[in-house]
Image 1 (cartoon, rainbow, N blue to C red):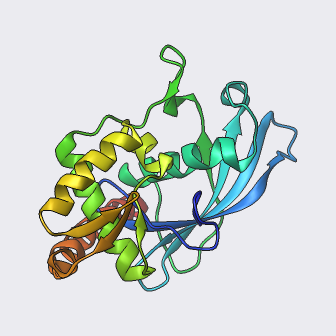
Image 2: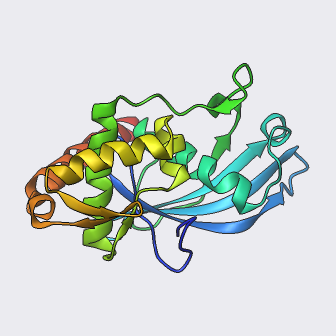
Length: 218
């Protein structure tokens, strides 16, 4: 799924290097249990794996619902994707071949009422550059085509602007990793030939995630 081109699957990479895709089952539905929250079912797929995925019921708290302009995709899709990415970063989501639906709170811990903004963690320029490289590599390898680097969801996740991401991407383009045109990147061999690097980053992140959940199961 993608906020820019709905017909094309978009790859969103975690800060640890895991490529994910999201299938969001709109719209939100009010909880049938009588509790005061809304629910949105989402399937998170760990790409480049053997069909591993996580089935999540995103539970939107009443407190957070009050700060949202609406519960439509245009106002909630980016924050939800980033909140779920953050949970993967924190090793709170387990990927399996088949599993039960797991409830996950979508609450004010991802929103600063003091600053009146979403907060997913400020990224340094070095971290942004690494994320851009991973984004272009995995999107190209798993989906193909040009890669849009103007996605506001990515800027929100990194606590920066799409303009700043474009500036950093332009610097990477000068290194010959990809070409840039209207914020679309076309990968070049200098980037795609680094398969071992991106694969090893993903393997390490996946192993840490699996070890954490294996430990918790005892």
